[in-house]
Length: 370
Image (cartoon, rainbow, N blue to C red; front, side):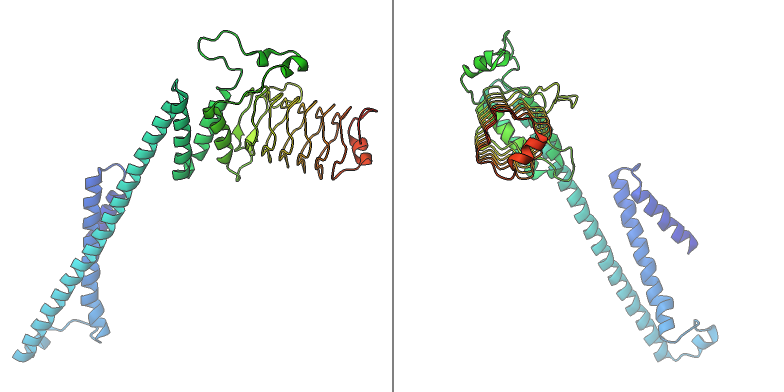
C-alpha cells in the first residue's frame, strides 16, 4: 500500500512538472487518476463495505469450511457482482476524468490559438502604421482599436502606440525629404501665427487623437494618453475628445518650459475633461463651449484665447497666463486661479466666482472686465 501511494505521489509530481513533454505529463496524469480511482473503489468495496455491514474482521478458514454449498455460491456471485460494479465505477470515473482533462486541454489549445491570433493582428496593425499611405495607416489605427476591445489586457500597449503615433505625426515633425518646418511652427509672434490658416490633422492622426484617450485606465493615476511634446499650432481640433490625455514636457516643468503647442487651435466644444494640459500653449485658441472640467492647466498659456461659455469647473489654472482671454459666461465653480494672470481678460457673466474672490488670488488690472 505504501509503495502504491508513493507511486501515485511521484506520478502526480511528474504530471505537474514543466520539465516533461506534454504527452508524458498527460500519460502520467491518466495513470495517477486510474490508480487513485482503483484504490478508492477497492477501499469502498472491501474494508468500508465490511465495516458498514457489521463485519469487523475477515472470516477465518474454519468459518469458511462451515459454509454450505448454497452459501458458497451466493458468496461467489456477490463477489462477482461487486467486482463488476467496481469495474463499472472505475470506467465511469476514468471516463469523467479523461473528459475533464480533454476539455482542459482543448481550452488551453483554444487560448493559445487566440493569443497567437492576437499577436498576428497586433503585428500587422503596427506594420500598417508605418505605411506611406494614409488610408492604410487609418486602417491600422482602427484595427488596434478593435484589438483593444477584444483583448483588454493589451489596452495600455495599444494606447501608448497610438499616442506615440500622434507625437511622431504632429504638424512640426518633418517628414522624410522635407528640410524646413511649416511656418506655423516657426512663427515668432501672435500676429504672424494668426495669419496662418487653421489646418485639420490628417484622418489617421485625428483618429489616433480620439481613440487613444478612450483607452485610458481609470484604475491608475498615470495611465493617460501621453501626447507630451506634440505640436499642433493653428490646428482645427473642434469636437475632438481629449479627456484622459497627458500633455506636458518630458521633465514635468511645463510651467517654465512649455512644449505642447496648440496655439491658435480650434477646440470649440472639445471634451477635455480631466485632461493633463500642464504648461500647454493654447494662445489664441478657440475653446468656446469646451468641456474643461477638472482639467489640469497649471502654467498653461491661454493668452488671447476664446473661452466663452467654457466649463472650467474644478479646473487647475494656477500660474496660468490668461491675459486678454475672453472668459465671458464661463463656469468657474471650484476653479483654482491662484497666481493666474488675468490682465485685460473679459470676465463678464462668469459663474461660480465673484470679483472679490478673483482679485484675492489672481493678477488683474484696470483693463480686466468684470
